[in-house]
Length: 517
Length: 98
Image (cartoon, rainbow over all chains, first blue to last red):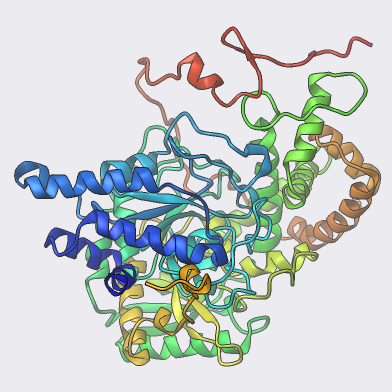
């Protein structure tokens, strides 16, 4: 039984879907195998803030009942019905707490489901639980979570990336085949890179954000986390589509993603290396794996061209003006009145203003406070034009740079992050060093274009995962899946299997406790 | 462009409704000065002729039919409130009586 369960958790979502459809396994078995894995290893990884066993098993049992009944009930099942999934705890869910990784929302339950969660429920995908993140998705390491950091399954002393380190680590540690993330400046892709998993930020507006607690509304995007490119395509098709509850939601169909992941060739495609997104400041091992992927794509018949986006040198600065500005506005609603904690001032008059001050002081962590203050500054009279206004102009320049680049190339390619996973605590006291992790992922958010990160191998100097990032023009998410799937196949041929097969085994709780079954 | 100092941070913290200790103000002023310095170049990047982008994929006039849609019950809306009274959010004094 242990062996069978061990095998089940290592399958991709696509393979699990096929086995479920063929009735080789039941959804309850698949879900239980993942819940057992969580019980076994999450004490070390801390990917989950809440585990939703009862509901997940009930949904799985419904799927099994429908399949057993056959006929219309079985035929109506979604292809991914019974394939379990984890949800980043920034996305609201009925029946489970949503904390956003913050003390201010400890114990809070949403009275509604996010649109993406409704879609998971409609597809009957059992929700395993809620995953850890930097508080309100602000960070690149999950160390800013009020509930302790998540650890990287490749090396438990290292960061799993952030803010969606919980979702990425859950998938890398085989605690879930799929997860949802949110990406404002790289929070899906950078954790994907450092944990050896796949993460996609769709085109801005391709997936509804209704029910994702807003951080920076002009940048936030929900997207898939998985172990294979095809699995992310399958998941994006589940969660995507127009939603009248999100006024930024696009009406374009985005229904060609799975087909694109199955095309299997890139011959004749033009792939652009962005001059400004590699080289200086990038770790040697990252650069080596990047060059190796370029060679593979060339071998597959793609034409490699070099493009330049000179205004990307302003991207990080523009991001750290626009994002905190929007943060300062979005987080004003945490005021100790409508939801979450309320802290009363220790002395002095008990006015609502002083209650707000005490509540926000106690409820928010340092990074959230830093960004709120920075945003308040950037938006204040006298500085607005120089800071927020200028940053919005830089956004235009960056969009123009990408337009010019995409006139020469079908997709762009770069390393996802400048380094492999660093040690927990290493950059905690240096906010600027932490921000630099997102230097290659931020431009896509500023421009609204889609980006995908996939495993590109292990760095020579430390044996840790390197991510390769693909970028496509707005609305052309399908190109990411087409090129990503081809590169993944070639890399896995070279490695003799998936990269995660090289990850160290996590010791099981039952084993470390001395028990054995 | 003026650097951010401790008094600025104290003023901004009041505007943002975040109570801060003296130690926090000292630390935050140093950290924010570094960050503000690093983003300064942005103000020189674009000329007056460059339009601002507020939304990466602009949509205009996103309306819906003028019909009653989903609404929360008072009970649902108040379910996460720290304090409530007779179907309303309950707060301490709005105005300082002193």
